[in-house]
Image (cartoon, rainbow, N blue to C red; front, side):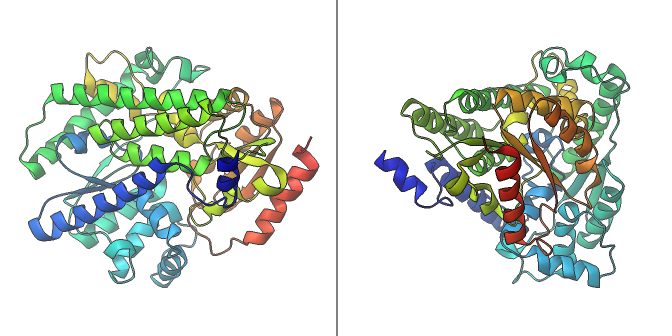
Amino acid sequence: IRATRIIMSNTNEKQLKCTIEAAEYQKAWFTQLRKDVFEENKPYAITQADMPLELFSLMGLPVVSNQWWAAIISAKKLSGYYLDRRKEMGFSENLCSYCSLGLVGTLDDKPEIAPWGGLPKPAIMSARLTCDCIQRIFEIWAEKFGTTFYPLDSTANTALPPKWWQMSRNNWEQLFQPHRLDFMTKQLYGLIGELEKITGKKFNINELKTLMDGVNLQEEIFEEVCEMIATAPKSPVRMAEQISNVMTCQWHRGSEWAINHAKKFRDEVRYRVENNVAACENEQIRLMWVGAGLWHDTGFYTAFEEEFGAVFVWSMYLAFGPDGYIRYGLEDPMRTLASRIVSMNEQLHNPPWANEWMAHQAQKNRIDAAIVLIPKGTRPSVTGSYFITHALEKVGVPTIEIWADMVDGRNWNQQEMRDLIEDFIRNKVKK
C-alpha cells in the first residue's frame, strides 16, 4: 500500500524500470547512428512507420521512422517552431504535420535547434503512398538530402470480411487477398534490390524467416501483457508507459534486444498484477484513447486520475501488435511480410474494420468511456472516426471526439481541453 501511495504522489513519474530503459536505449541508439553516419559513413534509412522495417534490419540498415521523429520533435516542444517555419517556406497549413515535421527540420537545417542534432543524410528514403501528401513530402525531402526515394504503392481490399483479427494469424492469404499479396511481394523484392545496392549484402530468405519468427514471439509476449491489462481488477500499467515500451520494441522488432525488452516489460507487469499494484489505486473509470499519441501533452493521460480515478488503459499501440503482426505459416516469408503491411490503414482507421475492432477491444478491456482524437490535417487517420465513435457508443461506451493534432500543440489549450474531458466524465461517464 505504501508503495502504491508513493507511485500516486506523482502521476508523471515512470512506474516501470523498463520504461526508463527503453527511452535510454532509443536515445543511445540514435546517438550511435549519428556517429556511424558522420564518422564511418555507414548507411541508414528514413521511412514511414508502416513500412516493412524487417527488410532494412535484415540488410543492416538502421531505420528512423518519420512518425517517431515527429513525436520526438513534438515532445521536445519544437513543433511550433518548425510548423511556423513550414508556413514561412510556403507549404500549406493543411499539410499533415505528423508526416511533414521531419522534412521541415531538414529544410530548416539548424542542427543546434533540432533534437539531438537532427537527422543526418540517409542512404535511402522509403514510404507507402497511403495519402496524397506522402509522395511529395518524401520527394522534396530526398531531393534536399540528395538521396534515393523508393515508394511502395498502397492498395485496398475488395472484400472486408468481419472480425479480421480472427483471420489474420492463420488465414491471412484469404483475408488480404492473393492479388494484393502478389503485387506487394513483387514490390518488396524491388525494394530489396535497392537495399542490396546500398549495402553490398545479399538478401537471404532464411534469415528473413528467422526474423519473422522473432517478430511473432515478440508480439506473443505483448499479447500476454494485453490479457493481463484486460483481466486485472485495475490496470497495472499506464497507457503512456505501454506505448513507450511497445513502440521502442516495434522500431527494432524481431531483434534480440526487442524480444528481451518485451520480456522485461511483461515480467514487470506480471509482478504488479500478482502483487496487486495498480497504476492508479483509485481506478474507477477505464478510458480508451483512439488515435495516435498526443505527443505534445502526454501529461493529458494522467490528468484525470486524482479527481475521478479515470485511467487511460488502452491505445492501439499495444493492442495492434498481436492482432496486426502475428502471422503463422511462414512457407513464403516475403509473402507473409507483405500481408503484415498491406492493410494497416484499413485495420486501424477505415470502416468497417477499424470500428469493429475498436468496439471489440473496448468490450474486452471493460472500457467505460473513450476519447477519439481527430487531427484535421491527417486524412488517413480520420477516415473512420465517425464510424468508430458510432460503434463504441452502440456497445455502450460513451465517447467524445476532440479536434486536435498529435504533434501540433500551437492551438492546444491545455486547460480548456482538461475542462472539456472533466465535464464529459461528470455528465456522461461517472456512475
